[in-house]
Length: 254
Length: 254
DNA sequence: ATCAAGAATGCTGCATACAGCGTGCAGGCT
DNA sequence: AGCCTGCACGCTGTATGCAGCATTCTTGAT
Image: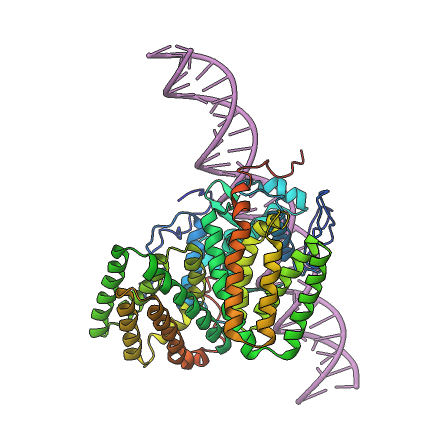
């Protein structure tokens, strides 16, 4: 932690465990550098987990208190997240959690499909055997979680695999862009994870992807990844419409 | 302009003409909504035009004074730009203008190629005739500027055409992502614009692109756009290395 | 009873004040 | 002479205060 200069003794967000009883298992490794990064990450998580509902306004005073920081660093974090497209800034009305339309999700998935296809080609052409082995290892573990019907671990491993494929492409820009869109859709996927979906279909997709990667068949990998994204739309399209229209304001601390 | 509540009477950035003697012709239409957007846009322009050199630290006090705003909104703008990847935030050292390596540029161009190819397919499949006509109109005007060897207008029309193609794809996410990467490379292209380059080659590429779009031949358009991006790398690769290592600090106001 | 107008409240947007951390320079010690 | 140490300056990071706009509740009139 750096640059601490607070007069108050509010709980430090970076060390703060679950501030709510909510299951906080889906977060990244807790080692965070700056307060800015911590706040950004925390608010991002709150959005993906629904603690901040789509369409709801973000009250700077309340959220700041809940996080133990003043309005200034919180506002800076909100600007950051606005640039990622997770929230919108309405003049004189502050920040609003972005509500994704069906069209938004479909468009984002189409772009993700293109990006992952491109990554698949690069991985087959340039990734090391060790990198491929790591991805396969994650895949095996994910299949175990599928066999046990452990949804949350499956979900996390799934995200991890896709991120690893992008990282193994060797194109940092590709991975960066993928990460932004992935974050934007994470909320939808998080909900979709609980839905009675076509889980088996997704698993079959992953088997095809892994097989193509193992053969280093770039075109096959690209096709399998693109098809997987297209199928994703079928799996989440019901969820998109179900997202509650508006929800309660953030946690009050009167 | 909204939400003005300043005690000082510093020049308003949104109405402010060239604060420096620098040629300020490459900016967008000057109608800006919020101060936040204005500051973000202004700093972005300063980066692409080299007023803020790659690798140089951004002094919040000086830059704020130069822009006529206090540190708070400037810092918020910097966080926003950091999310776009134009600058980096180093803890306790502030913001540093990001320096692009040759690898960065090559990677970004590869991704842009993929995105534009995808957009080309969509345009051929879904764009209206009117949209295509507008793009062709821009193309004609650009060719006129090429005939007259007017580099800067050519440059601006070129950027405009690519943006329009993305917009006409009907996929907002695609256009958004494209915009971010385009902004990141704008500095390089801006310099490359002045270099003794393969201008004729770029023009030929554009002719091929327009021909494919007119025929609504999606695959041909995709191929032409991807090839154009790949050729771009050849056109700017020399420029990347030439970018000065480090430059003077931002404008002082002692 | 319904609608309109005014006032009050609460929020955002910006500026400013303050507390640490990094850095550069000077002086002393080895 | 070179290196290390201590001090001072400057910068970032955070908190707080203030002004204006939006919204809402209340009150009065039709």
